[in-house]
Image 1: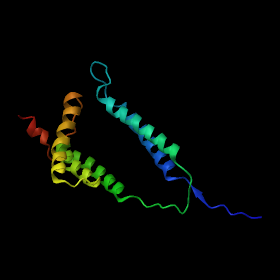
Image 2: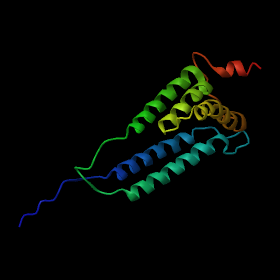
Image 3: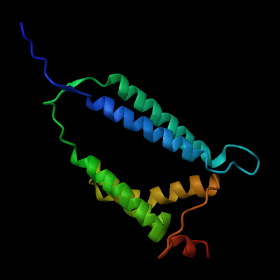
Image 4: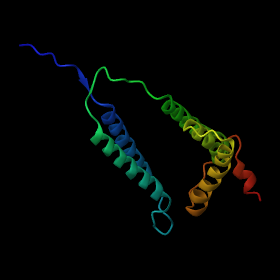
Length: 161
């Protein structure tokens, strides 16, 4: 008796989990490239380390929940994922050109838009509060060196006051 077994492939959860784990390992290695505080403490590297650890846990959970799927499983990627990827790449490019504050002020409301936030006041608040809060936490409280823009940087103006 001949039985035909359907063709199988790795489930989406397995692939996503593996990719998340690889990214978390790269982020962990990059985190250790950040200098310790002058007093020898963890300082600015604590957030990237925590993020790397959280990303690896999410990757492991995704691997655990991943299943073998049939070849006929849908492979369509949500357009929001592509939008966030393009937004992230654009954000990194913008930071190098116009600095951290303006880039974050432009990208934060766009990211919220991708997630379905449409209220103008919420988008305006994101444009104003995200750069201010992130700047306060990372550059002022943690003493991380802010990335300056090549073409223009709002920090040049603000630090003059």
